[in-house]
Image 1 (cartoon, protein in one colour):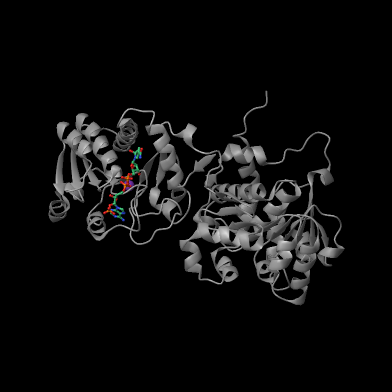
Image 2: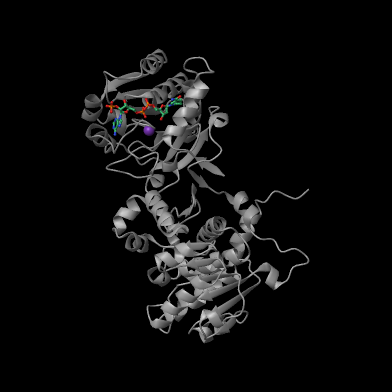
Length: 485
Ligand SMILES: NC(=O)C1=CN([C@@H]2O[C@H](COP(=O)(O)OP(=O)(O)OC[C@H]3O[C@@H](n4cnc5c(N)ncnc54)[C@H](OP(=O)(O)O)[C@@H]3O)[C@@H](O)[C@H]2O)[C@@H](O)CC1
Ligand SMILES: [K+]
């Protein structure tokens, strides 16, 4: 599990820890981890050229101390001071003692030698003290950078707490973050700016609260959630999932939703809708009816909405499913048709799975606004519907109705942005709900498996390839399960 904490919480823990340590100890730990990561990226330190972009705070101090370590190992290190009159004095002195040099931003911008000639650039412009996007002098300098950038704590210019990027921000090949993950390293669009993230332990863990703000489940966490059939089980005990999807116009959505449901670990899949013949032709193991959900046999969860269209049958299907006292997943057309009050009034859990465009319509805002502020959007939707909401994106987010940590999915891939891929996901999560997973767990585990399947299906995958890759994804994830004694 990767636990991310907002800045206020990290600062509080840092104060607690610092009070027990000698002056400067934390920064030394941070700089040692940073220099080690820089050395790994360089491969060989001696004889390389390293440029440091140094802002006015402690983030610049980390870069300077790490630069001093690299200079002692034989790198040519030049610090570019963005605010020469406000620079970490101890860090600058350490760099100079180690043989590094410092120049002002004007000097660095006037010739190409400093930034253009570097093998690696350390971004120490701002860390958790940054506000807003990069200022113009930093943005201009970065345009001259061709070498890989290693971000110190966070890529400068991103919002550590929300993952928002307001203006220009550093695009790093890698980020070394100190003490704890920050939400912006897990949430888009900031996440894409961070590259590969390495966490350096500076001893903060005992001072961080038990409940983080954002978490990213790893394979082992998801493996622990997935159902494992016992020897005494049968298909009803494993869970039966109902799928109400597809229409005369979109029969394929029904076929894809059922294909996801069949690979979600439930014991059986019942399909209700107008695409019964198409579903049966592709999936002989499905139990189908062309009636409405009310007339389907007993199920332990429903997935409703994919390709339903907006006819009278669609509205009825959504209403009937919402009236059932079992967990319900609502996707696609179902989102438009689901009455907010009816969802809020439900006793059994509800999971909504909008993409940014659908979330924008539900929140009465623009798609761009949702994409720029994913964390806020998913929390607001969960609150409005008193439901679990999965907001799709390259880092899909899942928020529960009662606050608590938001889950950010680390396995997503752009290959999943393909027609029908969401239908597969809806069936998959529906099946996990039927198998008895809690709503947030079902949504997060479904997104995780779906992402792994999207990565492992032969590229470029169609949605049916993603469904076909789910068993292999399931096996890959479960291989991370600790062995039973
Ligand atoms: N605390 C600890 O124990 C440890 C902390 N550690 C390190 O300290 C970092 C936090 O340091 P910090 O608090 O000094 O803030 P920091 O991120 O350097 O930025 C603040 C400065 O930036 C400026 N600035 C703001 N926005 C800007 C913008 N858009 N563009 C340009 N400039 C902007 C702002 O200046 P002003 O707005 O006043 O002009 C202010 O002076 C943390 O991320 C980690 O790296 C590690 O060593 C481990 C131990
Ligand atoms: K930084």
